Amino acid sequence: MSDLLELSLPTGTDLAAVRSALRDHALTSGMTARRVELLVLAVNEAVTNVLDHGGEGGRLVARAGDRGMVVEILDEGGTLLPEHLRRLPAPNPTRGMGLFIIRSVCDRVDLDHPGGHSRLRLYMDYAGPIAH
Image 1 (cartoon, one colour):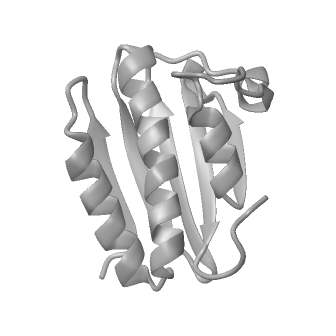
Image 2 (image 1 turned 90 degrees about the vertical axis):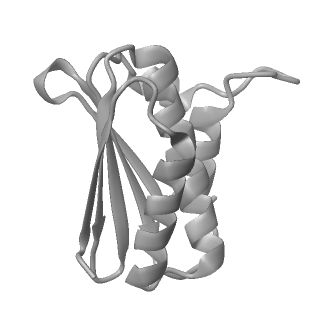
């Protein structure tokens, strides 16, 4: 198995295919099934944000390491800011829970802006307690 999964995320990307590819990659890397599903949930939320709000597509890179996986989601048109990550969802929201879910299930979440794009890095250990 390769330690690297790379996917292009053009507008109209099939989210089911992204989830399936990531799930297979994480399971074969040694991550527990429960944590795989949490990672897939978080990545689904991040990719949905890229496709719904970024407007220019993006790229996903998942790297398997010694202790866990890092999944980078690059939003080529997005303007995700640190305050977006810290924001709590409104009471009884019908939308706007994605970043809260990402922060809640991942062991660590980083945001930077290479080349003027938004890039989230989602960290998930192979085993261990659910974050937060």
